[in-house]
Image 1 (cartoon, rainbow over the protein chains, first blue to last red):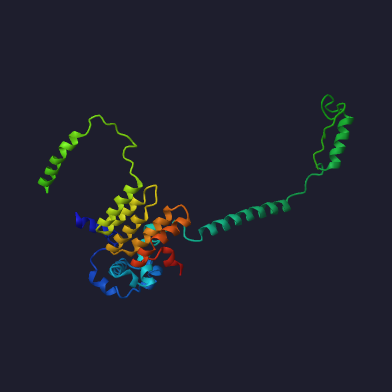
Image 2 (tube, one colour; image 1 turned 90 degrees about the vertical axis):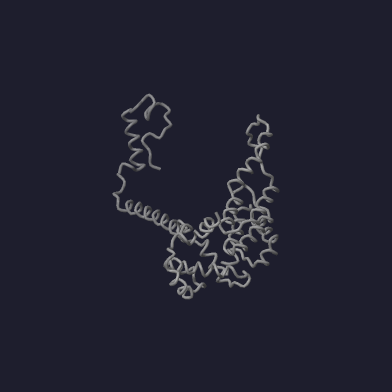
Length: 164
Length: 131
């Protein structure tokens, strides 16, 4: 029972590495500085990571008050840092990128709209207030729609006028 | 081993027979009080012998809809010390910060556990990564 539990307890570093390079890893242990382990952790080879793990395991057996801040940081980072399964789904700065992208697209859409408007033909000459009022006059002259419409008695509607 | 198991089973049998035959399963029958929860986990962490056990206990302990009492946290910290895993000790405080409702409660926990933290030399994650 106990050996199995121990093996599971070491799963954090037993999964990725093969146990063969024990001799080489102990020589590599001195090569990796713990102060900068956070920056280069992703780039380390798996046997180097194993070496760091073993180094930290030995360190954490000491009195914790004697550990330096860098060693504590390294121990925490290696165990629970944002790497492997704890890699954040979105790298930092993603939301800024998304906001800027959306604002850029809205700006592009506005620019396209303004550009199309500036290149378009002018509105037709019949879409003026003057023309529409003249059309009302002409409609009354011709008695268009005499029951409910423009030439009925006491008509208060706008008739053909639609421009402001 | 086997004969021991059989003997314990045999010893347990009269007790089983003594329980009433007509009991209904009830959802309210086995609700654990906060005190017995605390007691259970304090003794669990006192007996935990390896990192896997400690982390399993922490997972279970922090999975409930309550913030574990300072006594539980303290025995968990001592268990982390016993299995020589500093990072788990830091992680326990991270768990507390996730479970409490507001900053003041977290501060209260930190204050309450200050003696243990100083005794064992445990920094919180904020203290580690702020500088």
